[in-house]
Length: 258
Ligand code: ADP
Ligand code: MG
Image 1 (cartoon, rainbow, N blue to C red):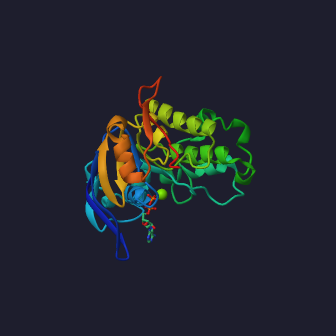
Image 2 (image 1 turned 90 degrees about the vertical axis):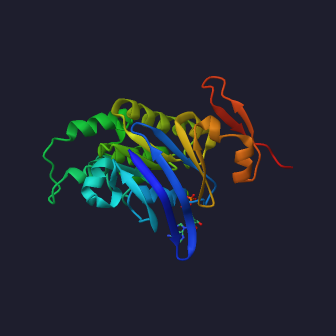
Image 3 (image 1 turned 90 degrees about the horizontal axis):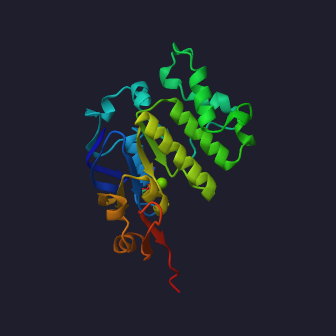
């Protein structure tokens, strides 16, 4: 679905990404991890076409990403950014409707009747009782579900998520990740998610790319990537890695250094 070749990016003269090479298969749940400032958001912004690489290529369904017209790209790729919602004042249902922009003409009209599609997503996200509220009347977890809804309404083939669970409590973290997984199972969407929580990355990702100081350390399954030596080399702290008793995936336990 996505091929990334020898990607490089600098801001002014400071290199922030170099030697990035990986593929993401259709229907895969692909994670990107790495310490703060390692280039995760920059990489995601390049995959969404928001910023251009200095060198290297990104292919989307074997065609260069930059050869897609913006609206065509928006029919294929949707992004859940951390501050991706419009200013307050808009109602939940209006925000969701905005997600249909790739399918609308310049009058904001669409051929297809989308009310039932919106209803379906409202129900899946448990937003029924919030539809008429404005964004400023929502909690953090509710807002994040609306932002996800706006991305899903685009009916993308690729869903890009940048730290979707930041500021959410554990209940909302699992709820949001489960919604994405369920949606993925029914629609075969390809998910690329920047995740700062290594344990969530382990539970949800088929494969994980680990970045450190703009360099690709490795790509592999959670078991390959989440090893204490590797984590220590990249994050500067050595966790204990254990097998999850139910999911049989690695989970890390932090250790105090003093
Ligand atoms: P991450 O998402 O992993 O925390 P980012 O991709 O946001 O990392 O940033 C990678 C590096 O690039 C950081 O050192 C950051 O300061 C720098 N950076 C990010 N955006 C810009 C920008 N627009 N201009 C200059 N430097 C930037
Ligand atoms: Mg970031």
